Image 1: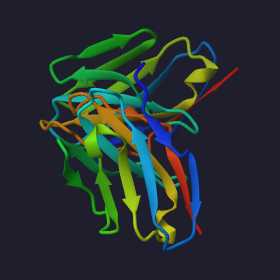
Image 2: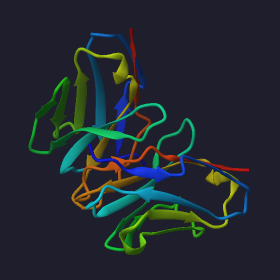
Image 3: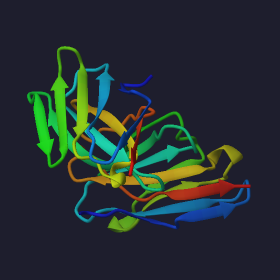
Image 4: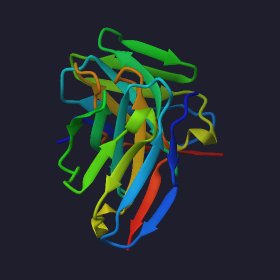
Length: 112
Length: 112
């Protein structure tokens, strides 16, 4: 079936540094999402993105977070600066019409 | 607050047995999706059942929907070890680009 790829699979960085998480969505999909899952907890919505714009963001989507998809390339989540509480697995998803979502395998981010 | 809640929290069955996961939701929906998340992976959609449907099948999976009681169930027959996962229901409301709101899910363990 359609696959969403996420790069890297793991990232370890020092608190205060910037990190960019990359998502390669399913081609021709129009809606893009980021979710955050802390170990042992439920997955939580961060942001969705359509037609080059953020449609909705949750309270977890702090000012230090930003998303973009320049020229139809990777859909990225940038965190600058990072904090300890940003340690989690971040899942990207894409959807053709905004209903069924296809998830990537996640990027495990560890902030030291 | 959560839009949906799965129960029970966990289930354990032997291979070949059937298992049923239940879901109660709190909002008016256009459809409801069931997702499965295996350890170390992102969620994968299993079934989407629309609000005007009462039952939907997909191979060994059967979903039911009762909009009057705002509940749904997902049954898996002839379970296999690879069905071991966390199962989530996700209501869809009347807006494209729907974010998914996950509960804590039901942990299903299928033993050999």
